[in-house]
Amino acid sequence: MDFANPSSIRSEMIRVARDILLLSVDTAIPKLDAEEWKKLERQLRITWEYGDRLCSVFGNWIEPEKLSLIMEIQDEIWNILAIYSTFPDVIGVPDDKLPIKKVGSAKADKTVFERTISSHVKNVLEKAILLLTKLDK
Image (cartoon, rainbow, N blue to C red; front, side):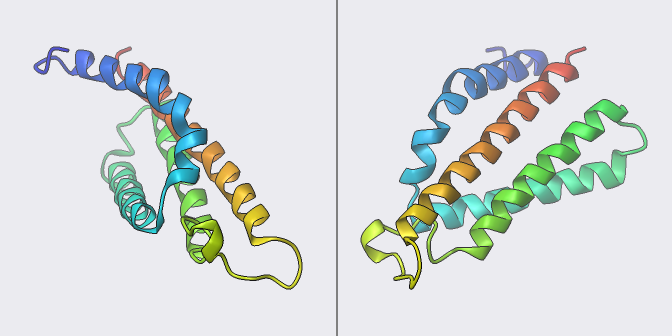
């Protein structure tokens, strides 16, 4: 990778997202513990805020297709944050420490949340790949 060439950097980011990250999402999300979730939440909020500033400051000069992708990425991030914020007593909690429910299983709920979050993470990565690809055109 040529660090002086933004196109080369973007190509490497695309390669890593496509060939490594996308393939590991389904197994990586369930492995995150509570501390890792807190770190991920902070980073997702920062990323969402940077996207918001980017749209606010440069939105008039960003091509509509690229602006739309940025906003779609933000939506996916928001969906992840909403699930995590709503169920912090389930997500990232070891199975033996999950709250006891009167109806249903907290473990089953946790699995559904993890699958849903994994889907949103994949959408973020796919949209980021598309955005990075469009930046070279």
